[in-house]
Length: 332
Image (cartoon, helix red, strand yellow):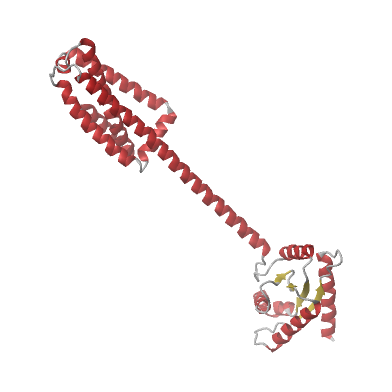
C-alpha cells in the first residue's frame, strides 16, 4: 500500500500524464504484490517455517522486500529502455478499451491484499504457502494474458482506423480526380462540354459505327455586344444561348463549346435531313423568343460516314464549311 501511494504521488505530479500514470500504477502494483507473495511462500517452503513466523524475523522481511524492489526497478529500466514496449504501454494507457481492464486490475489488488493477510497469519498448514504461490502466480498470469489480449485488440482497432482513414483519403483523391476531370471536360463559363471531351466522344461513336450528325454553330453578334456593352454582357449572351439550345436537346445529345462563339452539337442516331430540320426549328424559335439579346446563329450539318475511315477532324471540317456557306447565304 505504501509503494502504491508513492507511485500514485509520483504520477500525480505529472498532470499531463495522469491517464498513463494511473494505468501504470494499477498495472504494476498487483504484479509487485503477487511477486512479493510468491517470494514469501517460496522462502517459507525453503526454510519449512510458517509465513507468519517467517515475516516476524526482520532479516526475511528485508530479504523478500529487497528482492521484490530490485525486480521492480529492473522491470522499470527494461520498460524505459525498450521503446516498443514503452510505446505499447503508452498506447494502452490512452485507449478506451483500457477501462474494463483497469476494473479487473483493481479487483486483483483487492484480492491480493486479502490474500496477504494469510501471509502474516500463524497458521501451521504446510500447503498454505503453496496455495498463496498458486493464487498469486495465477493472478499474474491472467494480468499478463489480459494485457497482451488488450494490446491485440488495440492494435486491431488502430489498424481498422488506419484502414478507414486510408479508404477516406483514397475516396477524397478519387473525388478530387473526378472533379479535375470534370473541369477539363467542361467549359468554365457555360458549363457545356469542352472540345477535348467532344473529340473523345466522337472518336468513340465512329469506332462503334453508330449513326450521328454533327451541327457546327457560329453565334452571331458576340463581338458587337462585347464592344458596345462589355464582356460581362457578352458572357451573359453566351450563357443565355447555351441554356436555350440545351433545353431543346435530348439527354443523349452532346453540346460543346469549341471556341469563343463556336459550338458543336452531336445528334446521336440522327441523319443529316433530320438534323437540318431540328436546327432550323431552333433558329426560327429563337428569333421569335423573348430574349435580352436574340440569339442568331449560323450552322452547318455533316452526317458521319460510317462506310469510310473518316476522322473526327475531317467531320468537323465538313460541318464548318457548310456553316460558312450558311453564314454567307444569310448575309445576302
